Length: 153
Image (cartoon, rainbow, N blue to C red; front, side):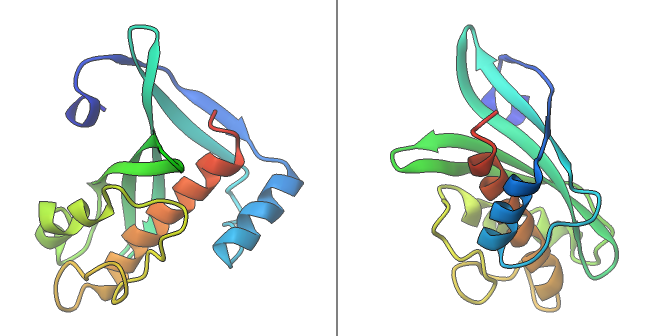
């Protein structure tokens, strides 16, 4: 959180999702949520009394196991946008490329109407890392949609 927003404070918020919210999220995603995705955890970040953004995490499925993705969201002119994406943990062979500024920097400024598709609006981290690259992109998109659907908790 401090590497993205600098100094400030944050709190932890757990948001349970209703069946109706889950259905709306799944419709927007185009695929079902994981069976255990009935609650999401948020970290609203504050500087003084002002909320400057929100950090969320998600474990995507890469080629060699889970990829824990951290997404920082801020309010843009036409809705929420990504401020930064980081990798917290992974088991991929292309770890350095996945964590590179070149790959993760592509997500900055992306919003709800972007495709988040490797080969379309996202370049793969490196040759052979297409699945891992798409897992990161899909996690970022999912968290942005969940954030939008839950009313920006």
